[in-house]
Length: 81
Image: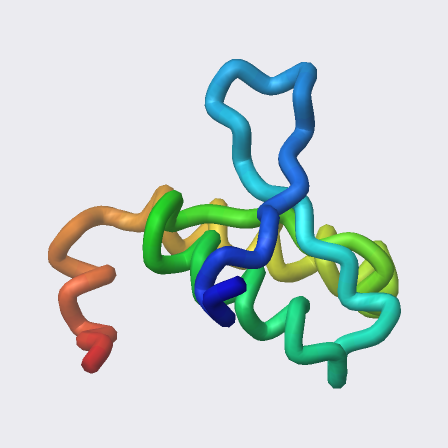
């Protein structure tokens, strides 16, 4: 089988079928293939078993919301490349 044909698990309850990728074994080649396929073909994915504490995730989402709530002229002061 082709190395780019690893199956991408999905949340079957979600009509948009965002791939769910298990990082419990991040050095597994199949995980890398799933990440590539999800990013390339879908554009989004959900990571599970990533070991990032929930409070850090919550903080990041909160900061992101605060940034995107700013006026456009303020956000444009922070270019990204």
